[in-house]
Image (cartoon, rainbow, N blue to C red; front, top):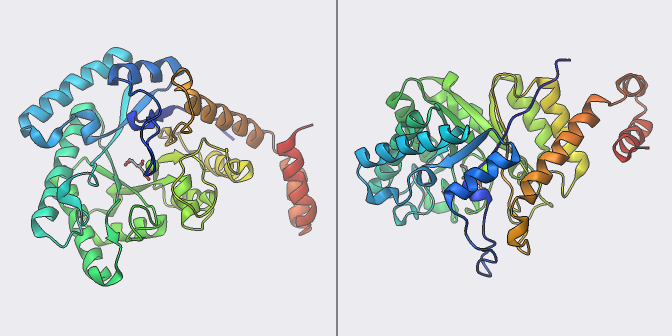
Length: 345
Ligand code: GLO
Ligand code: MG
């Protein structure tokens, strides 16, 4: 097996300040240059962006101004030797996306979502990437009768089509999540993401991004989602993190809630050669609310540490012994073999 040298990525939003729906910030906000320097210090190779991380207050700026600022950001990134992995339109904050973007029941809001997405593709080009991430945050319902699933599927496919037509080099990476902020989201799993590609002009340019927590929220094993996506050559990015069951989206450090589930994700990445076509391992994790300012980087540092420890565990897995037990259908001992391997001697 070829050993992959993994390269790591995080977003500016991953240095979050501790705010939750029940309480305010618990740490001071850090500036963008501070975050960039932090990633460099950690030895991360790439940063992921929302359109308004790249160009703050984006809605108050002309298209020309937006592109000018994106170009300036590219220089800043080049200066630090950090690459932009992806850009994602942040379609869930604006008053114009209260009912969703592409599937909103208001025509003017659907247009806003499309215009903003096309602009995101232009920003990505300035930043030197063609990869666009679509977390379809509000494309769903709180109330089943408020939208038609058939119509929403049509609208989503039309939106993807418009983005593909906007730039022949753009590649769209759908990041499914079954719920939160919505009760039900329209593209809840990788299967949905890959299937909707076939309603567009160029399914080849639509892939996916798996987030561990989102798969768990859908009641699935993220390792199976990885294997499935990679069987189609469609896993173009990943957000590793962890999640303790079917609760609010927790974005815990990788491996924090369930080491064995994390191990199996790493095994799936290893066996499918993730990273060998230039894909990055991104951690979509947040500091715990009690985290103090001086520990601002720990959740990223620790996620990478756990990831690399699990890579070692995957590479030293007693395959021959496991295969013999599998051939004998002796899953009782296979279970213990895995546990012993994870626990170490
Ligand atoms: C939220 C998502 C979010 C996306 C990000 C990139 O649940 O994980 O963090 O990954 O907005 O599109
Ligand atoms: Mg994510």
